Length: 315
Ligand code: C5P
Image (cartoon, rainbow, N blue to C red):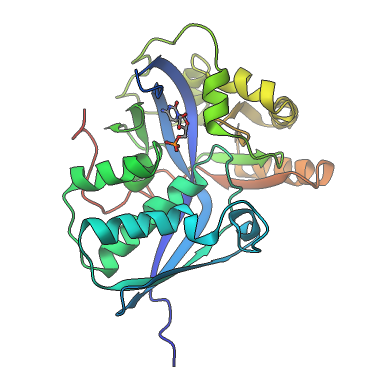
């Protein structure tokens, strides 16, 4: 009889409520200042121990084919970020055990909400538990950064002000569970191309008050209106439908702010009430059946992980 998958980790969607590009390093990576939080929607990773050292990863869920589950894409299933994270962790800590992993993929890929990064972070958390590794937080943080600039923030979860290229993580007061709608027009966008296409001045660093608390969504929206996503124009240049998505979200009743997340193409709308968010999602889905549309909420501190804290250790 096969052992059931007995370990589970959530891989929630990451949202950049604002994203300022504040500079560029000599190696080409951009310096960011971004308020990151997580949503109540996401992928799910399950795992079980193997004694023989092998690692397998099966893909299920509506977005599994985009990760190569059907063998038709460019990506071999063994190259997905979950497998890369698992192999890196196993090698780094000389683990002799292996694991069977099963990723339930519901988030669109290459879409600015950190799907792959959230999956990789979930794999690191799940396998540390399964393989009984008690990593040094900085060591694990560095490993996460090797996998992608957004992986450290996904490892930590919660509400975070992210700086550097993604390795400087400042804790900020958690946001209440404000209602959101996420929309992706179905185009995968290339993060390197968007960063390369960004033009203009850099934004000042540290514009956000790290101690600010927001009890009402109106207060949060007022503060966010002084900020923006500096990658928006570059992303629209490469995927013009992002413009339609932002306009469609913003036109729905009760939408207080509509903005792109990360390097796109997923955009989010913040809504005054859960009903308004549900209603907007229904209307948007009916009007654009080919768009990925989901209503949910900011997850506050629900996904703040029990991992040793990376926050402020790099600051
Ligand atoms: O680290 P990740 O794989 O997510 O980044 C993909 C690409 O996006 C990088 O190779 C780089 O071109 C660009 N990038 C950047 N600055 C960041 C994050 C990503 O220029 N802070």
